[in-house]
Amino acid sequence: MELCNRWGIPHSQFRGHGDGTWSDLDRRKARAYQAYQHTVCPHCGTRHEEWDEQADGDEDAYQAVTHRCIGCQLIEDKRKTVPEGDDGHGVKVALIPTSVHQAMQFARDHH
Image (cartoon, rainbow, N blue to C red; front, side, top):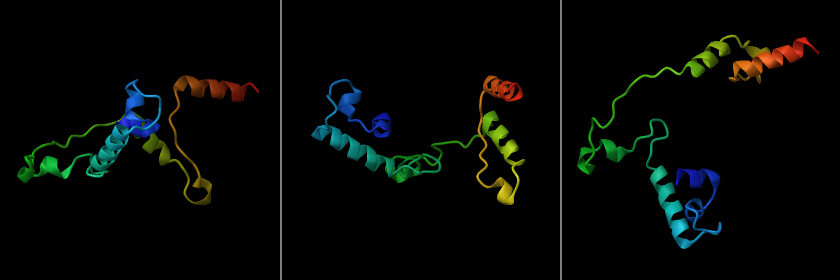
């Protein structure tokens, strides 16, 4: 349903059974998915019921772990070099493959 929601298509079409029109079942599935999504915390991705022992949840349902994303680390490091004030307004930091960066450098240097 996540992909159907993202692509805006009925579930029956995603499964290869529909012609793209929304059946009553497709609409019910979409509404149920939306209702479910409203129960999910936008920050951690868990639901209250997963933690609530009164609802057959477990207060130890998840463990917090750390993970370092090297890409995010590079972005944060580069952000530190963006000037403050007007000179930094609108400056975005993005990752591009090294090969693309080298080709761009070559094109700049040779034109």
